[in-house]
Length: 105
Image 1 (cartoon, rainbow, N blue to C red):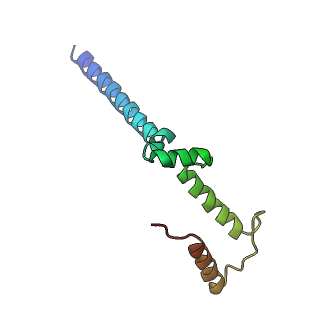
Image 2 (image 1 turned 180 degrees about the vertical axis):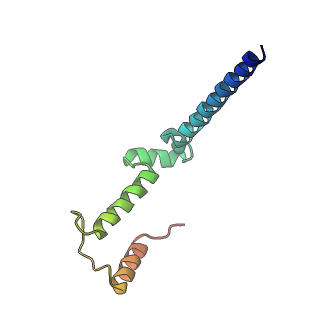
Image 3 (image 1 turned 30 degrees about the vertical axis):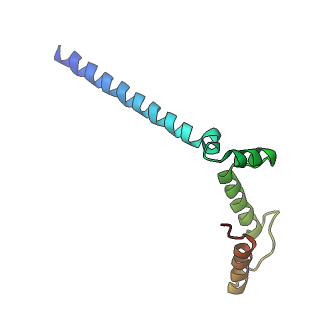
């Protein structure tokens, strides 16, 4: 009788834990859903994003980081033949990237 009670408590605990994990996964899925991200924008921003066919901001940032990596890595089709062993070249590239993106208020 005692072992059956212990087994019932163990099974109940396992089901509770599984339910909790599913609950948390649901909230994570809601948080990363594009509609949730769009709800943080103003109606004008949403309209502009839809009219201009803009992609998600995080996806855009990841794509741009990948593009810069491709441009600076030998053997890639986007490689720009930059001499990265030179400190002058490194500072020039850093300054060009920094100066080409304005700080907007």
